[in-house]
Length: 212
Image 1 (cartoon, rainbow, N blue to C red):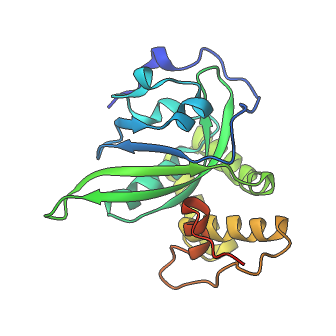
Image 2: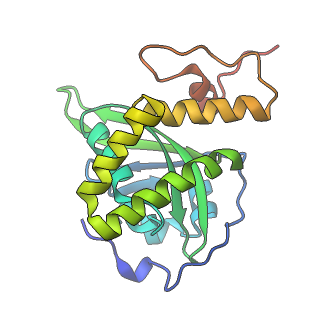
Image 3: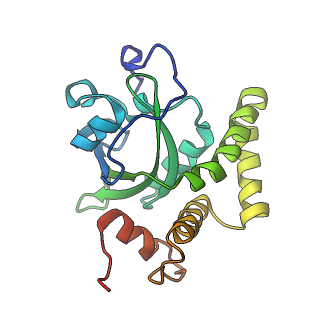
C-alpha cells in the first residue's frame, strides 16, 4: 500500500513536537499496516487527526532519518507472529518529530492467521535517543551510498559484534539500562528472562508496577 503523499509535510523541521509524554500512543492496523484505529494521544503527538489517517498506511508518519532496515526487521518479526520492540523517530503533520519506544501485540484468528497488530508507543529518555541516533545515522548513510542490503549486513554484524544480541533484546536492554540510571537504579528493575519480553517493559507500557 502506497503512502498518500498529500498527507506528508512539505518540509522536515529539526524540532521536537510538544506532546504529553506521560501518555501512551496506541494504534491498530491490519496485516499490511493500514491504520484502523488511533487514540487521542496519537493525534496529539503526530498532529494528524483520525479522519486523515484512518485507512492510510502507517508509514505516512515515517521520518526520513529512519533507516529502512529497522522497519524490515520489525515487519519480518511481526509477520512471524513475534511481539516486538523498536525505537522509532516519527514525522508529524508539520514536519516535526517525536521519538518513541514501541511494543506490539500480534492479533490472530482462531486458525492462527494474523489479522492485525496493536502498537503501543511511549516516550523514552533522551539518553536512549543519544545512544541509538548515531547507529541509525550510520545505517541511513550506508543505505544511501551502498543500498539497503549493505545496510542490513552492517546492522546484523553490529548486533553480533557490538552488543551480542538481537535488535529486540538490544532495544529492551538499552531502554531498561538507561531508565534504571535515570531513576537511580530502581530496585524493581527485573532480571533478564530467556524468553524476553521483559517484565520491565510490561510495566512500562501497561502500568504493571508493584506498590512499595
